Amino acid sequence: MDLAHLDYILYIARERSITRAAEKLFVTSSALNQQLQKLEGELGTALFIRNRSDWQLTPAGEVYVEAAREILNIRETACQRIAELGDLASRQYRVGLIPERGVDMFTAIYPQFHRRFPEVILEPQECNVRAMQKLISDGEIDLGLITLTECQKDGNVYHHMADEEIFLAVPAGHPLAGQGCRMPEQAPEIPLEMFREEAFILIFQASTMYQLTRELFDQAGFEPRVLFSTSSNISKFRMVRAGVGCALLPAVFALPDEGIVYFRLPGHPQWQIHMCSRRGAYLGAAMTGYLELCREYWKGKFG
Image 1 (tube, rainbow, N blue to C red):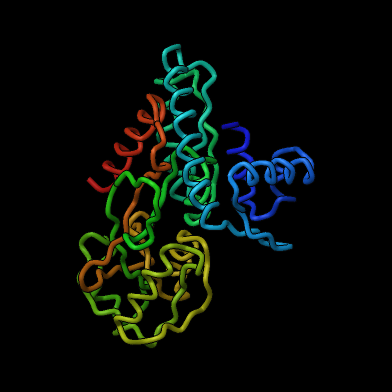
Image 2: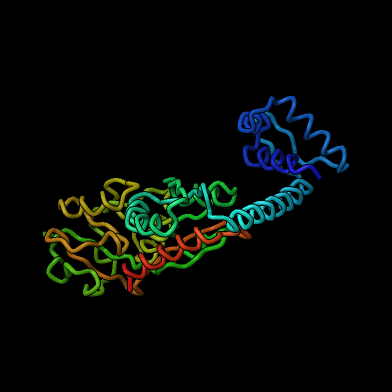
């Protein structure tokens, strides 16, 4: 079996287009199509359903792609383990960071990582959780920070860092503010439905937090009046502090502030913080060290 064929098929499956796959592989579409036809001839079956703009895997193609990923993963693992017999010289890893908290974590732990592995290069890449899950599955990110609920996990490996509570943040001038607390961990519990008439700043729909947010409003029995949606929890915090509206904030962003009071919600809803890697991937000494530093960082945040 020609290992180049494995890469070819994975690129076509990933791009769902032979034209786009050829561009990524720096070959012509006709050359790539010839390789695909040759492989399908050897296998005696088609691997793709050809459409003009969207190539889909056949059942045989799905089997081939799954096997190809396993074979290439074995090759990558072997190469990494051989490299580690030396001095880890010039090793480069791609680490995924979700916006805001990911950058904070990376800048906090990188100095210590660099002292331990001075020859290792880390290439940080910022993206949202759903994009990162795909990049990890495709082997384009080695280890990524992810926040989600249990039902949002895919087939990757999730290394649990912490459970993070979601708090209700309310402007200090709100009529019910006197019942709340500026320290979120000391905040009293209150039903979300008591704020059914208030305006809310929500997280945008592409966020994994959006599903949890919607479930909380559904359980409270009302549709929130939405001022606007944003990708930034920091923006939500600042809008509450400015007295614009209320927001649901993860614990990391629920900071003590004179302009905000906090409440805990019934059941103390939470989501999970994980470091994520591809199933079957060999992390090696450097990525294992990075993972340990991540775990220490989140332990410091949540105890």
